[in-house]
Length: 148
Image (cartoon, rainbow, N blue to C red; front, top):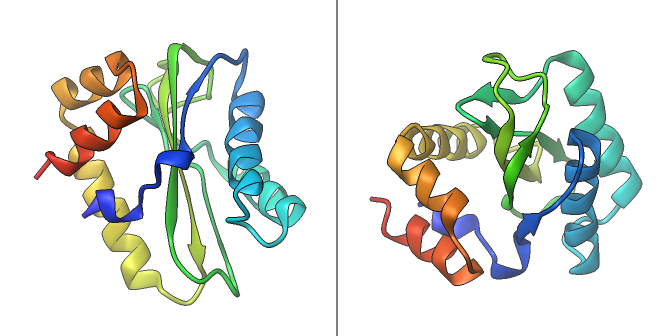
């Protein structure tokens, strides 16, 4: 379940002006709780991935991600933006929900399972709307815990 990869410390209501500031705010959050061993390497990997192709998948959602040798487990950082930011998404919609995923580079099957579960969950327009309207971290966690 997606809720297995969530941590209340990794859910943020963001007020930023652009994609880069949103990504940086989520990386800062990861760094503060010691979730990434090398902040700069992780930041570089995330931004390099964005250069290849935008992780804005449409529906107001972005899925930036990076995998590294030595990461013990997968994690998901959630950023919620009430107004959204330009992300160069495939549908050109502003992104309001960011799911930054990180984890070990040697567990591709688990990674694909996380992506599959997450994309399946966020396809539901009502679910996305509830996430954007959530007022507290507890509400966000409850939405994912009750999503199956």
